[in-house]
Image 1 (cartoon, rainbow, N blue to C red):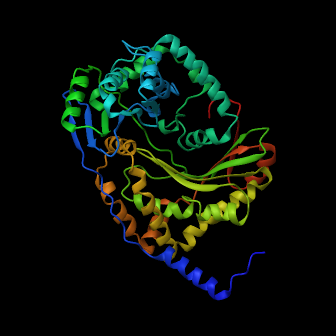
Image 2 (spheres, one colour; image 1 turned 30 degrees about the vertical axis):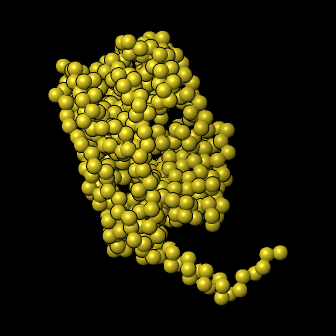
Image 3 (tube, helix red, strand yellow; image 1 turned 120 degrees about the horizontal axis):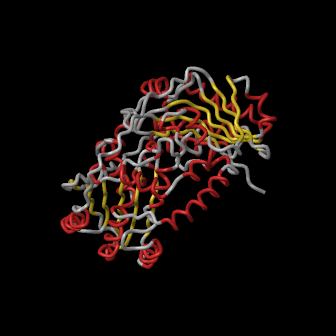
Length: 466
């Protein structure tokens, strides 16, 4: 039988724990490592950062070629990014994969909301073999028809299966519900109808309009000598030219969400409800990016957050609850996210709203703020430990227009947060009015619970699109 701890020992342990939580430890200040940047005559921006701890090189390449450029062809950016690996003028898809696999290189192409991206990592000794292949993937893709058709078949299956997993599609419903016809409402992977209509020519046209040296950037981080790498990049990419003018994107006005709305997506066989509750958030360049992150850590950004404590620990309504800010170039979203048993939907939503209300009504005390600041500062340096993370950071700096001061001043900006400043951040950036609700679950059992919150609209999850 476990012995009961005496009261004095309990007090000492509690006191020691309080000291650990509230003490403000000396912070080992993290600074962005030195790097150089230059631009080729064709406009391609290049970042070089030497890191010699391990014999690896990581490359991150970006272009303004994300889903915001899809127009009426939903999923085009994502499919085009996939298509970069369908083969080049001198290598088939199979030859590329076999060569890179033999060398132990990892490689990936993808499209986000705003960018088309290529990433690759490889042993530094293999750079003379890998770099020419990367150059061909970027500059000379052929979007081979047979590979295109095979990928389309898989994509249609993936889009259908995604609707069976609410967690994989609820974000697309949420973005579409908030942004409507605005480019930020475009679903990144597209829909079955849009995917079926895409052709190899569509991919070629999108590539020609969006993958241009004048608007692209390459970041190289790892075990190399900058002088030699600069020459390699110049030799490989200086001859890449295009007479095409960069695609111009008109974002348009962000919708004005001036009333509470609920979107209920019916899934007949669901036994649980997943929901997002929120509003518009902040853009990537917002000067209060850091203090917003500190407050969000308290609300729902870590396991011991208020949302997770109330919904999971105290009431057993869910296996997890969190809050998040997704930041784009011109806008962003805020949402509280959770899932619960169908019959507990109303209670889980009410508790989420209560926790958000508590944040506004009570603010945060000094001990809670110190704990969040210590957590953020503790997590921050490991986020940039690897060459891959640093390469991605450099291309993010290019896309979103911030500089190394974001990194170099980050920990000081966290540490300088005060309780008074926290109240200002909460009032300014954590929406509590005209909240938008997106729920996926069994509509017949949820409808009467949620219609009290505001204007209700419904969709069927099996229907095409979002």
